[in-house]
Length: 112
Image (cartoon, rainbow, N blue to C red; front, side, top):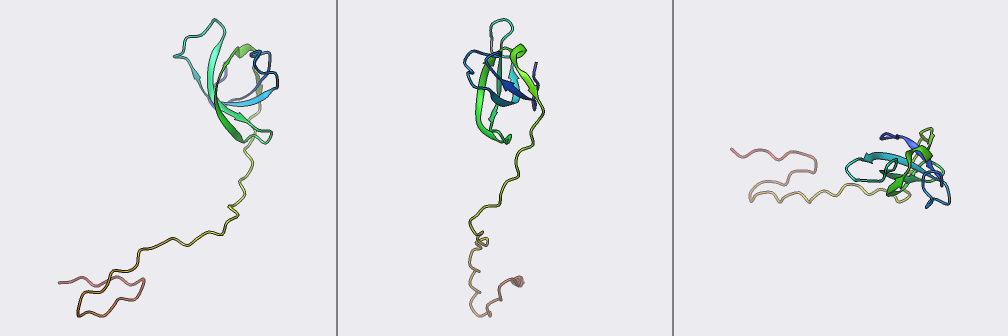
């Protein structure tokens, strides 16, 4: 029986619906759903050839037909290609009447 975090290869041996093998990362075994004897529902992610999750899925399979795989490490993410924008800050509040404006980045003196 697979456990959370396991990566398995799902083939026709697990279920006839899988004509092409698929790597799958198990999030959990759904034990609350009633199934046929020797069948289980698995909740998790289908993985691409690099080990990155591509779709969240629920699978109805026979655990005896699953092949345990080593956990592939997800590929490192490339940085966002768009230039980052500086954080937007609201404009400084206007100075009360009769007081000089406070330069940006300086705390406003407290009124007593």
